[in-house]
Amino acid sequence: MARAKLTIDLDALCDNWRALDRHSGNAMAGAVVKADGYGLDSGRVAVALAQAGARHFFVALAEEGARVRQAIGEGIPVSVFSGHMAGDAALLRDFELTPMLNSPEQVKRQFDALPAAPFGIQLDSGMNRLGMEAADWAAVRGDVLARDPDLIMSHLACADEPDHEMNAKQLRAFRDMTDDAGVPRSLSATGGILLGPDYRFELTRPGVGLYGGAPFMDAKPVAHLKLPVIQCRDLEAGEAVGYGVTWHTDKPARIATVAAGYADGLIRAMSNRARLFADDVACPLAGRVSMDLLTVDITHLDNDPTWFELLGHNQTVDDVADAAGTIGYEILTSLRSRYERVYTGEYA
Image 1 (cartoon, rainbow, N blue to C red):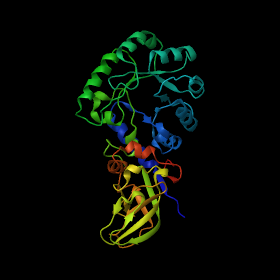
Image 2: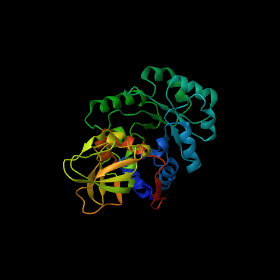
Image 3: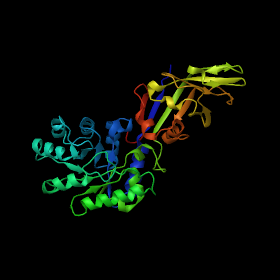
């Protein structure tokens, strides 16, 4: 039987990076490839982006950084958002990774274990998640700046809401902590880039927009997901479909059973809400998403389909996320290994 197929368009990925690089103005655009390249393979993604011109990569963990370094080779910085965690010294050293130090404890750990190695600093400008607050930064600032950090960064909490007051508040806090530091700075991921030049500084960190996600509405789709039909059946009026019989029909209907489910990352919250496309015709999910199967209402089609498209030109990751009550990040990073993966484009 045909397997579900996930096609990753590396040309679209690189086009999205170039567009966000242009939006970055005088700042250099890096690329965030954490969570295994947002579920699309960090090695393949990073190599393509490096060929397109990206010259700084960001990951969440040192282990992720090691994989990216192995893929892209030497010479391009790979920064680690989690900083220098206990036990990371060997990975940071051996794979030439740059930890973004988040606390005075991490600063001490870095200077004790790797005193001559590159590092950056992450500051908390109001998100209260990662980074040093103003008082902690003041306590270590002199020693840190004397050792010439590569970068000082922070992260915006509400950049996908351009009018949110938190954006300007965080910008002021970041500038207050860094304006006289004399170090390259980075504040903006995809949403921050689109807020305008005040937020871009010397380096931007596009992430989800590279992969086709909001708030970069001009992004080209990168992930294309096609799912094969196993069988089709007719229902009489009054019959139900799936676990818990949550979908009923009050008239004769026809149902297609599709080979994919929550074991493939198609989250259960899509049940009775998401749509799939037979060619360009939308078909609603009928019943709950189960481990390996979906059921789709095809009553309105003239012919039984052999494939459905879930992600692609008809429907973005954010369209699917909206139907499931979540965000595009979760849809992308939930995609599992059972798909046949095909990489296309000049950079494949």
